[in-house]
Image (tube, rainbow, N blue to C red; front, side, top):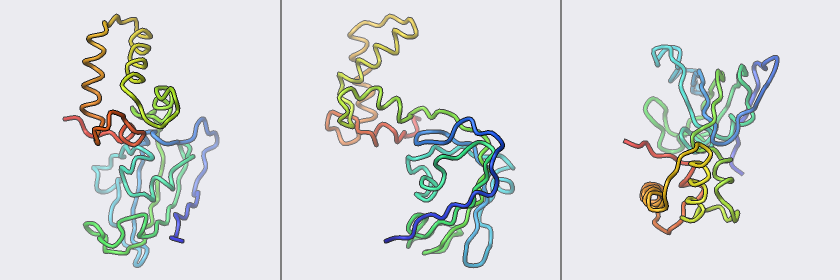
Length: 189
C-alpha cells in the first residue's frame, strides 16, 4: 500500500469551537521543506509578503496530502505533515521540488470559513441522495433560497438561471451536476 500522510500535532488550541471538514476554506500560514535535505522551498511568512493563504479543503486545490492531513483541524492548531511523493508532486516534481520528493509542511491554522461549495449545501440540494443534482433539484433549491431571502422570481427566470448553472457546472454535459463538479469550483472570470 502507498505510504500515507504522517500527521503530528505540534500545538493544540486551548478551546476548539469547530474542526475543519471538506469544503471549508482555511486560512493558513505554512512552511514547506524537502525531507531529503531539510531545505525550505516555500514559506508564506517569507514568500507571500508575509500574508497567510486561503486553501479549500477536500477539492484537490493543493496536493492530495493537504486534503488528507488537514481534516478535523482547529483554529490555533499547528500541524506537521510528512507527505510521501505519491500524495505530493510524484514523479514529475514541481518548480523547486525534485521528482519523488517527500515533503514536510508545518501548517498553522488561523481561520476557518464555510466554503462557497460546502458538502452540506450539496446534500441539502441532492433530494434523492444519488450524489448528483438534476435540474429539478437545483430549481427547487433555488426557489427555497430565493424565498428565504424574500425575493420573488418567476419560473422563466428560474429556468434561465438553472440553464446558466448547468452550462457552467455540468462539465461532462450528462444533464447532472456530480458532487465533484459541484464542489470543485472553477475560477469564474
